[in-house]
Length: 368
Ligand SMILES: [Zn+2]
Ligand SMILES: [Zn+2]
Image (cartoon, rainbow, N blue to C red):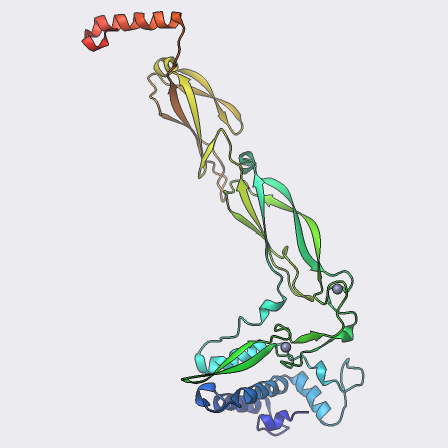
C-alpha cells in the first residue's frame, strides 16, 4: 500500500489545512513547465493527486487510516480489507480542475469526464399538415432507443462483484501522457482508453447487453406540436433519448417538424397567401366571391375596378403566433382571368361596348 502521508510530505495527524497547503506546494513543484527535462513528473503528479484525493476526504481518509493500521474495515466491505472499494472516480474532475487552475487559469479537462455515461440524443422527423399549425396537434412517434437492459437492470454485469476499479487509471478515469517536443516535454491528461473514463472495469459482463447495461427498445412517444410551429423547427423532449451505459443519464429526443406543402396556401410567417382568379367582368363591376381559408370558405367583396395582382387582406385569418395568441392575416392575391375563348353572344356584346366607346372617345386605335 502506498504511503499517502509520505507522498504529501505530511505527518499522519496532519490537519486539513496542512494537507491542502502541502498539496498546493507539490502541484507547483511538479508543474510541467518547470520540469521540462524530468519525465517522471507526470507519474509523480498522479501519485500526489491520488494521495490528496484520499486524505482530503474525511471518510476516505478514515478508511485509508484503518487499512494502514492493520486491516480493520468499515462500512459495507464485509470484514475484508478492500482497497479496491475506494471510489476514486467521484470528485476527480474537481481535483484536475484545481490542478490546472493553478497554472493556466482554466481547466483543460473539465469536459473530458462526464461524456461517458450520458446517452446520445435522438432526432426524428414528423410531418404535420398546415391545418395542424392552426390548432396544434398531438402526434405519436415511434422511436427505437437504448434503455436499461432487463437482464441486468442496467448494471452490465451478472453480479455486483463483477465491477472493479480500472487497473490502468486506478479509477480516476484519466491517464497522463507526455510528448517530447522541441519546446520541451508536453503533458496531456486524456480519458483512460481502457475504461473510457468510467474508472471501472466489468469482469463478468451480462450476456444480453455485453456489459453495456442497455438494449434497444421501441417506444411510442406522444408529442404535443404547438400551434404556430414553423417548418424545420425542433422540439426537445428532455431525457427521452438513448440511455447511457451502465446507469448513465439519458440523452434528449429532438422532434424535427416538417410542414406538408398545401396546394391552396403559401405561408409567409404568420400570414397565408391565397391566389384566386376572378372573371374580368367581376374585376370591372365588383361583386362578392368565395375564397378558401384554413377554416373553410369565406366571402370576399371585390371592389369595382380591381386590378390584376391586387391584394385583399382578410385580417386574423392567418396562422397563430408561436408565442402569443395573435393570428396573422389571409392575403388574397387577385388574378384577373382573361378568357381565351368566348361565346358568340359574349363577343357580340363586347363588340357593341367597343363600338359605343369608340364613338365616345374617337380615338382611331379603338377601331375594330
Ligand atoms: Zn445486461
Ligand atoms: Zn481506466
